[in-house]
Image 1 (cartoon, rainbow, N blue to C red):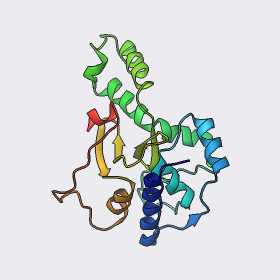
Image 2: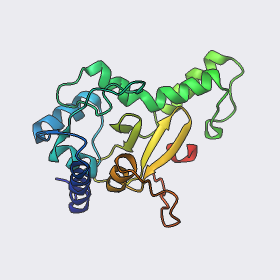
Image 3: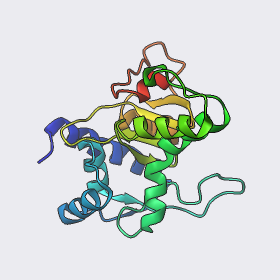
Image 4: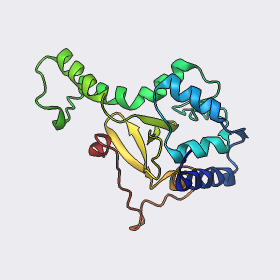
Length: 200
């Protein structure tokens, strides 16, 4: 059972995306499909993300020239497991890439080991304990967690992390409408998830 507010937000996000006319939708995920996905990949969807995917699965369209992601919407129903694992691992792998090649080090991990391999192993150990982020679209993510909802959507590119929506509903406006609202002073997202919020 998901929260009423999470269900409301997810349904509103699905309506907002449908109103853009950019995507067709397949039937939403069933309870049995959610159970299989969460068991197989080791996380639970946040309530609003779950309600969004239960309302309907957006269908990927052929990519435009130069587009980074050929299938930006995760295909939770029938996608290749390795591809879904890669999408789930994108935030962590991006941080590890920055540790290895850009001298990134998070102060909460303590002193950086002098040896590069040891630094990478230490970072990997700490990242295994960071909250799981779940792909919404391409490199836009929401925190996992049954019983949670209303988190800002984060855009993840290595350690370059920015807000892309106050919540899932606002995200659909920010990503798929012509005009983004982040120039508005009232647009003031607040990340809630440990570690990842510190990279913003």
